[in-house]
Amino acid sequence: MLQIADVVARYGKTQVLWNVDLTVNQGEIVALVGSNGAGKTTLLKTICGLMPISSGRVELLGQRIDGLPPHTVVDLGISQVPEGGRLFPDMSVRENLEMGAYPSRAWGRRTEMLEKVFRVFPVLKERQRQLAKTLSGGERQMLAMGRALMAGPKLCLLDEPSYGLAPLLIAEVFRIVRSLRDEQVTVLLIEQNVKHTLETADRAYVLENGRVSLEGNCCDLMTTDYVRKAYLGL
Image (cartoon, rainbow, N blue to C red):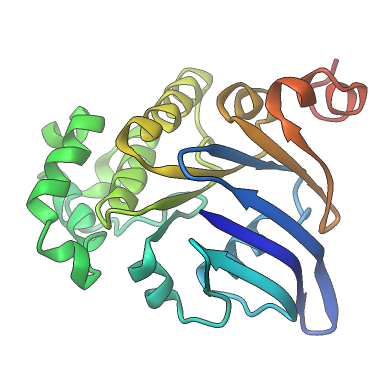
């Protein structure tokens, strides 16, 4: 589904990503974990076309997408849920969802996609006439994820979906992430909550100081001394 090969990225003269390699196969949930400042969000920006790469390649289903504008990347099948959701607060829940269907290939299917989103997030159907700013934190995160699904993505990029949520809501968000697989959506999950992430994903990459330091099956990574000490507090 997604192939990132030898990617280097810079902010001005400051190099942020160092020869990053990452693969996401169709139907997988792949996690990218690491501390603040590790380069996780920067890597997402390179995938979405929001930040140019200095060298390397980014491919979606074998097609090179680095250098393409963000709207074209969305048209090709990648949706992103940014950290904090970035909703339109003074628009209704339904209007926020319809904004997610702006790609031409998705607009004609918006009624079908709304039904799909309401199946995954039934609370949004109940709240569809409410303004986004009146929702709870958990409901806002559901709305942000639902808006991303409205484009009918092949690959969904989730940036810190548990950010700022209470523990019970965090568990619910990760349950929803797992349910996306049932909707035939492949997921690249960026998170600092390493325990929940490794329990949810199939495989994971550990990004430190802009470099991939570890990768592998999540069950295997959870048993390594380094991950247990550095990220799980064990």
